Image 1: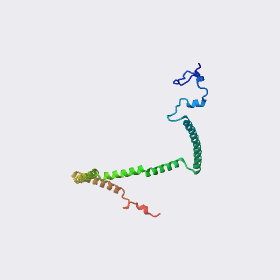
Image 2: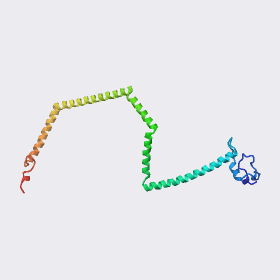
Image 3: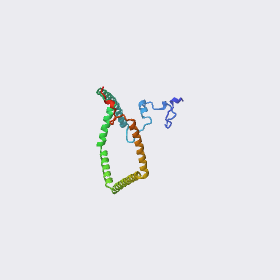
Length: 204
């Protein structure tokens, strides 16, 4: 027996039999449509046929609607192109509208209200007040400590300035300054007190 004529369904009670053994009066389409398909409980063959017919019509309508939608999308794209609407502008508009929708949504409003309530409870809680007081005291103590350190440094610098060694150093620096300024003054003896040479005022 030719293998092409073998029944593929091995669970069939007619496995191994040729096509000739099938009922000859069953239409090929019906046999193909019902092969391996059993009707759900409570559904008659007539009802199944009606449902199949309705499914075919719905699928045809879906296909038609897809074609209409595609044509409408092409038309809308052409209108946008002529109006100069770019995808970036559309994206901005969509984001803006989306954010407005979010802000006016019930979930966003409730969340904002809940956060406000939590903030109110936290700021009025004893723990928050104690933390604020502790931070304030710590800041005051830090300011006082820095002020004390600054005063001590100023006092120490004042003591150093009044010390004999610092005065001796200061005197030496003054002597060096007088020597440098005096030497410069003698070399520029021709210069007038205003720092300009008397020849500068000579007539042309």
